[in-house]
Length: 272
Image (cartoon, rainbow, N blue to C red; front, side):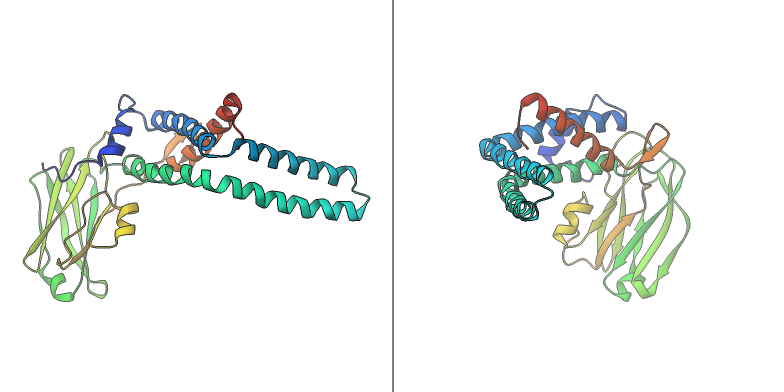
């Protein structure tokens, strides 16, 4: 069994705070509460609370005028114009604080998805390893080296039109393993997680494509001179069951963190 990489230090330290939680549901609930609180506190610290309060009060006054004077068209039209200007003023006041909140939370969600987005391959369950090469020559030259715990369950399938080769594999024992793919005199490793627990999973390893790697890969980039462009594994998606329904953790996190944020907003008296 070979360890290919370590988690990013900053987010690994943050996630370590929840290491005592073993259930994905418990992790999402705890993380949502903490993030909801941090969102509200950060928004309150970076925003002009007094100006936001005034802008919201003015919007309420204009909306009330529309209701009270709905029979007086000039007054109603003037109130609608003031509502539009007031909404623009409020959005301007909220935009910068929202950036401070959204950017770190987005990066955090990308890291958490490494643990909760997919499940490891079940022991003895078949899975597919797909390698995309730059040329047909590299495709014909592609070879796979497996650790003893991983076996090939079918001959490789070459998709010439896509410069892809697909291997069907299975893991006989739980753990984290390194699969070595050789092509053009070079070799590249790809991590695969077999068994239970909540390992850090990377579904794909890419060459170049910085922004795509940031959001979809948790492994170092494939060397730029390699004839291999990408290596991917079809991990099963993880759904969390709640009251008989199954959903992706991101939707649950979004809803719970928003609810927690509104609760903490009221408790702390912060204008949003």
